[in-house]
Length: 72
Image (cartoon, rainbow, N blue to C red):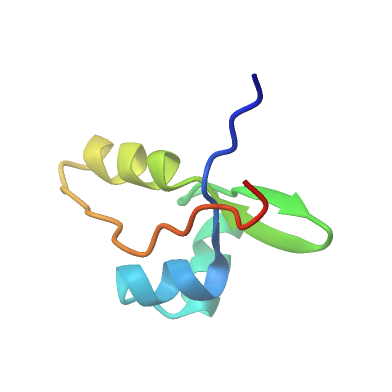
């Protein structure tokens, strides 16, 4: 069975975190933020990866805007 994980685009992620998307891009270039994955030219992020990153910094994060794939 194939399972699909929900993914967040850079715009959704920046809204959830309250951080400008250009700041996120800068942090990615500096290797200070997870790079996510690129799909069809779009950078997408697994919510679990972002939670793990912030938990490693001692910050608890709750991602609320998780949208399940529409083709399920």
